[in-house]
Image 1 (spheres, rainbow, N blue to C red):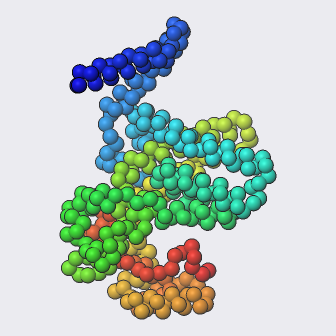
Image 2: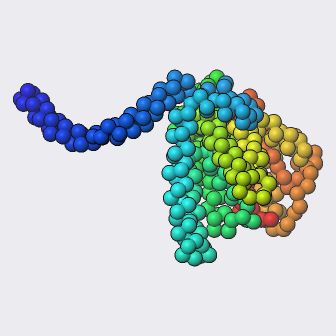
Image 3: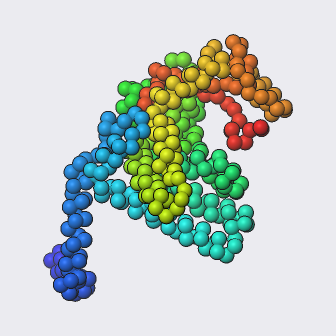
Length: 352
């Protein structure tokens, strides 16, 4: 029976041979063209693979366009593949937008919402750097209409989560101890309470003290991914500057704009830098003393919702309407940030 089955599979395979032969270019010119494309592509992929992965230690703490260019020039296949992935998302979006504009439908709020929803989903598929770009645009009412802003604001904390096992592995690598040895998640659950472009947040208690904290864990391979996207955007900005200088009388600005965005986006990957900024902000508003209890925070929120109160510098008794959570430096590293958990109102939905 086994021999018969092997013979049957062999016969089926033989029937596929003519079809495979028809797929092979017959003319000499076609074969030369196929070889001319296949051989350089194979060489490019092999060279790229020989360079190995991009490690965190290879990447600078501060945005360095020259360093990114040197790293990804050595890995051209990955850069080309990523650029093609971005184009595959961008072209359908641009086509749909052009059709809606041609039909005069862009004035409709429903069409704007549908276009924004498609854009948000595409940005989520494309990953963190493009999500950060969408977040930056979500606070620009001078550029985008309200339905688009509302949809893009969902990128702030409604991104897909990554596996808890990977998050716990990052905590172990960064802090030197298992997640469960440092934090107790029994009360609030083991799942993250929110996920954004760069990481996800867990609400847990510190073992030994019982303090409720927010633990933000960066997504795996985030630095390599964002450095590649920023390098592709830098190439695009340089191209746009060249076209602007060649065909218009405008002053090229795309590279400068990209550097400002890239510097800020790259700095957000360093959670130790974020912790330092948060502590400085906390000192500036006089929040160095012990955290206020829940009743004081609730009273402050009710006062803010009942009447307009201007922002003012805090005092020693923490009576300010502005409160900045303190940082737990013993549980903070470049990819893990632990801060005091604060109950409050979502900024985008808070009163002016």
